[in-house]
Image (cartoon, rainbow over all chains, first blue to last red):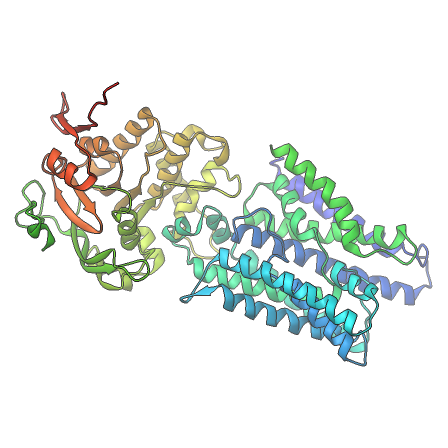
Length: 314
Length: 283
């Protein structure tokens, strides 16, 4: 489809329907009047879903462009596993379980980002291949450390699974609500910054050297996109855990609607990512009593869709 | 000078017979050194490309052709010596300014995503556009003109990954033309193409050269270089073995000494330019 306005209408409709469903349906029943405690919980869940889905999809699209690789996702650079490690260490070591996990997660994400950056840096230059290699290696290391921390800390594996597979049921206390407001504001700013690099990302999809000859400062673009993506994903993952597949699949869906230009793909991914994540969450908490980790749903929906995408391209 | 040591034709400006030296120099490399790792590939390399030259750069694999191009385009930094573009130090020029002066066509042009051809050519306008600026009428005209020039206007709404290699190379050339550069450098731009497309690209380059653009054409195709270039630089292990009109560079003696094969060099029946053939094998 090459009619942007039709595509936009569809995406906005998707987000509106998903939001309505997300507020209306839940284990607490269908909302009516006079259910304000449930309502508050669901509104927070809605806000978290929009921020998380939007950020993951925008970052996924940006990294696919930067790395010139359609299989990149927000977790390719290792940040998510670092956040999971930080959050689980906070859970294992701290006494106030839950409340400080987002802070620990974010610190873990930042530390991972610095380590990956340092590993990828050779003679002052950061290459995209270096970032991917360092990120993938650190992911493996940190994922096993999460398991180790959980086992040594005598925590149930259930907690680790939710941390590593994502959920929107973050426990909000007075402090963490304000933390979340700050995260939402920073997410808007970060996404806007990524949007402003659309043309550079387009040009980098034909290779770093070609982009340099077209006047793109590929070093600056690489470093900026890496840092913004890492900070955004680190913040989101601290609240939701690592929700997979949204950042991988949504950008492809949006490219099918709008073509590959990032000035459309990035904002489109923001809307589509939020909508699809909310729908997945509605499924996740209504199919099975007690809810499912989100990545199970996103993968159950995402994998068949991805296979269809691959087959239709061949 | 190494050229003298080897008893080969010199390459200093005054003695360089076939070249127009009255025009100011466009690319000037002096005392240039560069190496990958410990060993230097170029050690005190000098080159002067005059405005309006159509310079062919030939030499065996590993001779340093692509490295030379990258040094001139600012993709690599020399460890010593200077690169001057239009009599200004390359180091002092911003990346966008370089992109407005030098257009580059690389051999491989992969596109990770399937952009529309006109969007690909519009990427050539990047050095003229501010970060938040959308392309204007002037930019769209430049894109149309570039596509017309390479005879690819009919491709403008096609997808870049669905057209042939020859068409794609013309589109990438159009993107370089949309940069409106004074200098155009091509690295093996015709290697993957059939002879009709090779001829088409070479004729487009000749026309651009007639319009005053300086062209640097890296190629393994000695015959194509001999036919179209006004000067040929023969590189070998980072040294300029010869740099002169094709007749004085593409000779049996020089080809043998550099490539280590015994060639047959004849004259093109129409233009008199040298043409190289491999010796026949006994069957």
